[in-house]
Image (cartoon, rainbow, N blue to C red; front, side, top):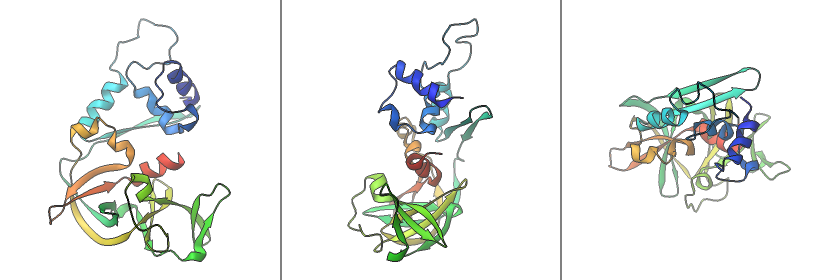
Length: 229
């Protein structure tokens, strides 16, 4: 699928929610799941004969799942359906960001460390990068990404969680490390699913022993939302 044509058609139909140039490739492809969207110029005998992609997406999200569209022009497309188990246990690394606890799946964590000033660099656009064994990786401030107030603003005062998911790597910056823990994963309620919360970078939640709630971070989605595919 040509994401530029999809974006152009969505603009023509008035479906864009932000300036066209701000859409990533992944966001443009996801527009095919909007109600009534079609790239066909003419109605044929097959038009309207199937279930719309919007219905598919809504039903997947009702059970706490997520539908991801991947496509390379001239190569092919892939539709990935992620449906959580009603109850699943996973190992996570808990971090604090302001007054919020976040859980990062251990499967995505490669390394945790305190940043040294000499390993912090910036590219020509001002993007913060962390040097790890001769290679630079982007820094994502979780407080800024999720809009959480935090008194920790200096990168050397907090902790870096070097993560990798589906060959995408980045350093997630948090205030402090709480520790490793096993949690019971619960999907978000259908009420929250309708607000596309999964696309924001959260894959679920869990209730801890003290009764507090921790949100589970979707590393791949966060990196994709900021830097694209």
